Image (tube, rainbow, N blue to C red; front, side, top):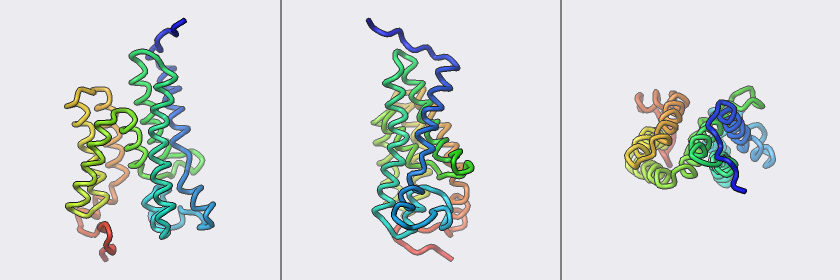
Length: 210
């Protein structure tokens, strides 16, 4: 017997958000660095738990593992809710779960709501939700990073253009979700924006300016 389509109710939206938040709040960067005997990642650099701060330990392998796991949190949240839901509501609920994953990564309750900036998790959910837009966002990051050598600028441009890509390609629901995440991402990168304006942001492969 075919199950009835999932209805887009407030209860369903809350469940999807909580599922996403649960996955997103897993602090892989903190766990990985502690297991490697490097102590608390929050005590160095920017103090957040993302791959960029893990890289400041000098362990590129741990930073890559954190990047992949943090990306996977967003993707898995989208995929699981899409599998659990059915019908037209599945797309919207999956997007809500993805947004919840980014919120969980940025504000994990287990770490007093002090997490990362959410870029990797955002890219993971975009790839899982709309693969073509995810590919375009990654390509945007690569092009901007190659030209200007600023990782943060590349991330900000990719976040800004992802909603436009989704809307142009005919994914209005995804475009709205990506717009919300773009605004959140820019807010989380506000210090990077200030440094970019002042010209003191560190470049890829270069020493940080004084």
